[in-house]
Image (cartoon, rainbow, N blue to C red; front, side, top):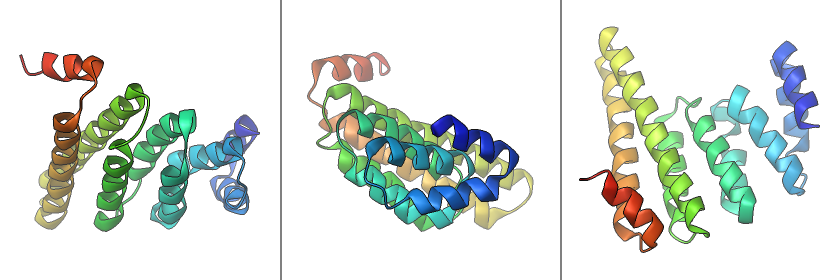
Length: 168
């Protein structure tokens, strides 16, 4: 189903988004993952509530997959509060996520979003749009601060080695 819906999206994005929206109420993890995949590639601020809820409610390996899709989706959004809220959701779920590599993926996702925000800030600066530049800079700083906070509270030896290797 995933590949079929993504193939349809390649030809008719609006139809694929419409089908994905009808699938939002399904509770099966594979269906939720398919909807999230479509939204991460073709969605917008309009799907933010569903994406956030799906991410918050994810469990086990589904969380690992959804954080990656959610980070990609956040990069499609334009509304500052939606992006900020998404980063906070990743941080909040990351406080207790298990196993350790899921938390690592969450930190990586925040860094990825932060890098995207940095790129958007530079693009706005080149265009002379100081308001948009400031917005993207605030989001970049938020992503960096949340990722750093997660790293500072980490207790897993594997992650501590990875995080500390970057500071040497």
